[in-house]
Length: 309
Ligand code: 13P
Ligand code: SF4
Image 1 (cartoon, rainbow, N blue to C red):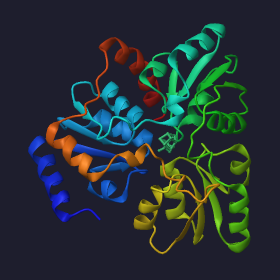
Image 2 (image 1 turned 30 degrees about the horizontal axis):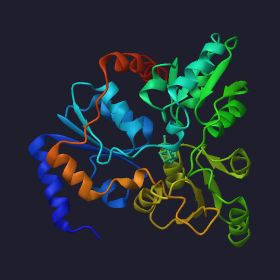
Image 3 (image 1 turned 90 degrees about the horizontal axis):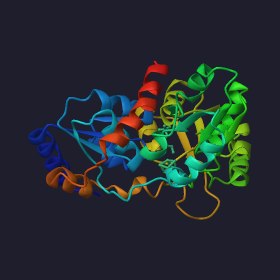
Image 4 (image 1 turned 180 degrees about the horizontal axis):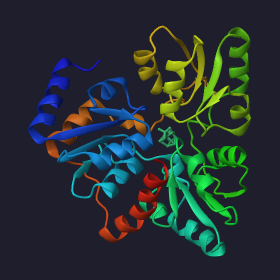
């Protein structure tokens, strides 16, 4: 339990330094509650681009904070814990990716935003799970597509759009952990519950889901649905917003394979309220990247924002 004093100190520092806190839905509840804006990765990228604040504290993972710096270089961008990475981003080393690209020079390169600036810089367009279908549909039919780094999201988009794609074989450690056997058991116990899932889950799970979408789309679905009960297959942090914005709905987190907390993203959960306070106070750790790399990564990110309006 975080002390009220901690909240107060953060609020004071935010005002004194003209800082904004942007938080992803997978952050711990207290961080979501103190944030000025909570959203999915596309909404957070837009918020980072638009903000007039002098200081952006990004409560999320490294690729998200790096994206904020790419889009808004004149602001100082802080990440409470620099070790907050992402298994998907880690699965795609820039040198190996460059080798594959060199073998397929005719391919249009679509990269999921969950990747490093060095991968973004090698891409034609960036996508998030909320705009990926729309963006892939804009790519000329005669261009072959290379999709990185998430094989599950790629396979789902390929099926939705009918576009064949060469898939980089990366995956998210959280979304690949759900036990289909335990979910099937839950569905027997709760026949009135709908299974809703993030597209980073494995294809066999997605095939059984009644609704598939980004974190924001899942939240909107639960709020708007006439149904009362949901089995939610994504990181458990989103349940906090679902409980706040759809009180009364029954939410069952999809169980992981083992008796572990594997449906929590270990990277997202490295951020704590204490680290948020320390980062605001000391203005570190800061995201830094060379202007050359920033400009290369900016072009496909801007294309994403243009193509997803
Ligand atoms: P969203 O774009 O749906 O917020 O997903 C981000 C993410 O990291 C999912 O694991
Ligand atoms: Fe990366 Fe998965 Fe964590 Fe999202 S949930 S940040 S994809 S490791």
